[in-house]
Length: 374
Ligand SMILES: *Cc1c(COP(=O)(O)O)cnc(C)c1O
Image (cartoon, rainbow, N blue to C red):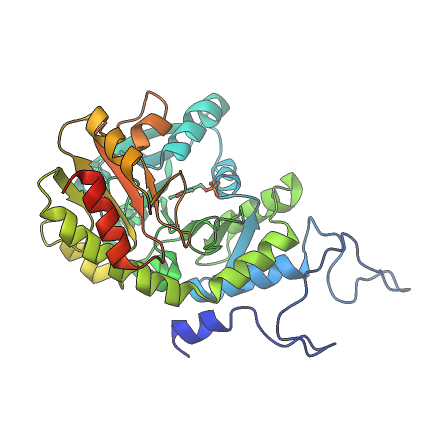
């Protein structure tokens, strides 16, 4: 099979058989002609059920992950919702103790009332995961590196524990994309993506996806929720996501190189108490990261010496970084997470999260240096 770079560069790009256009068309039609015999000759009936542009995105992402199928949604959280709705009331969900804040809110505000049981555990400790599994645990949810503490989970070790207890393992692959980490190679069962981030890559498309390692009763339930509940990815978003994926390898390679350089610089800066990035040998997940990731990723967080005021001061002084939430775009972003997350947030008040973009590394380094006061 060709290298990932080759497959990404040509993602979804078979020339259009009708016109020879290299770039696939965007199919906006919501409905499709039925033959005189009553059948739908090309399989498309109505766009909520299947749309050619969405299908092109789904099959492309499934192949890149090495999965059997994919379902694309209107956002990452719509994808997460469909996965949780495919569980049954009374089932137990195991979450990481530093799960993406939006995910914890979804579980607390929607699914607790719906009857889903859930608990949290430190996913970096496979024995703690084993101890937290219950007879009714059906799904173990992981994010590695985690958001915003960059904790690293040993996917194979957690998959073994989950499977032994009869639970599936889902990996939120948003921060890594299949270019940097392919969870199915480490025995995971499902991969979730916020397409909004690196796959789209330009901060201009909202989307989500679930990729299934195998087609089974659970994937059927998620797909039924996708098409019946209808939180589907629209054709233009699917087209933008495919367009973004064609430059994913080049973007991530440069972004990872810059992030590594910034992490090393910040690590020695007197105004910085801690740097969280798996490239650093001091990072507790460094060895696992080197084993299961192809590169260290372009997200990092720092704890500024002092506390809330010092962290907000650094964020206020940046000129090349932009203060904004989200991540994975071509522009570098800085965010004070604790103040964007509402009170149950466990993020340290001194923490700033950085999403590294495509600016020149010297400019980003100089910007952080002046903002930190160095
Ligand atoms: C942004 C994000 C999500 C949610 O995705 P949306 O597209 O914003 O709904 C889920 N997981 C992670 C790790 C994210 O960064």
